Length: 186
Image (cartoon, rainbow, N blue to C red; front, side, top):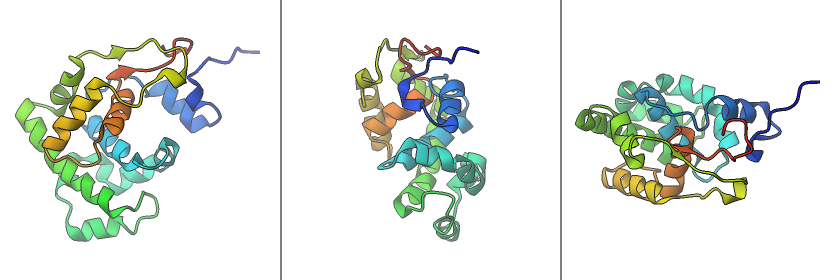
């Protein structure tokens, strides 16, 4: 019998969670389209569990033109109204509106810095922060880096980018490695 891999305890029990943990969480992302996708999905999570968003991820990709930031930035009121009728996504008017606003601002930041990647990775000095937590209970909800990121994004007009969301974004995009030290991904 093959020995089961040791994983961070938060992902146990559901294949979709383990797959996300094993293949994505904590892996450094530098592709602007993927960085946009994660920014939107992390914002959609606000007030909900990550599993809720993860289960709707494919629906989000279909509904939001595979997170083509240029297309999303041009969504009309009619398109937003149609999205609010889509049961495959989280139908929250503030979050749908924020997606369009954030797409517009994402493009401005990318133009200013050459890419969103160059902008966002500056908050960790261009390299992942590798923490050494033994248990998931040691992992913080925010950090000085996520505080700075949230402050700057908010100053630029981004929505659903509080420090807790930014820290989760940093984890998802591999800017922070919070796999526990016993996890095979550590």
